[in-house]
Length: 193
Image (tube, rainbow, N blue to C red; front, side):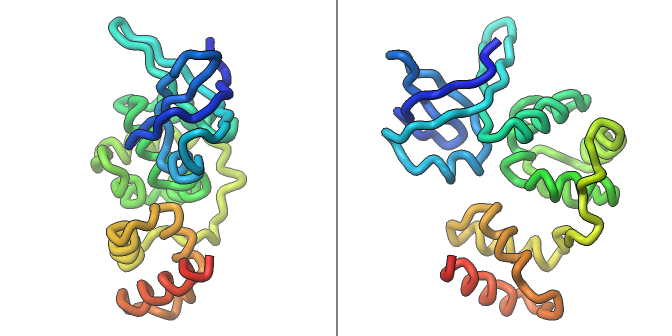
């Protein structure tokens, strides 16, 4: 029904934006990646949207790219995955990391998303294997190892986004195995950016 939305950002919430469109403020739930890129109140924005209609509620979900929107819609087809969990997945994992984890059947990667336990992760692996185009998923892409999960936790506690932390981790040499050294190198990378 509402395929896209363009307007001016009126308010930035913890999981949503209020966008002024033709004199009306529209609340749009967005992934953390969008919240981190908006730049502030008063800026113009264009989002691809998905409207969810329930008996007592209308909720609009917005994404910067059609690819993210399509991935959100595919995630909604998984039993037990609603819009909030699908949004949490897109806030935590890049599309490439998600596809790579599904291709390799790494449920531990999915379990790092808030709201996803072992059973849901296994169900997602099974149901998404045939629904996602995994031909673009890189077998060379490093998944988040336990040591990297610790580094991500430390970096996010310091105020960096998960996307920034993952990006910094991809630049680190694999031979550095110590958590403290990996955090220091990641901080150096993030300071340069």
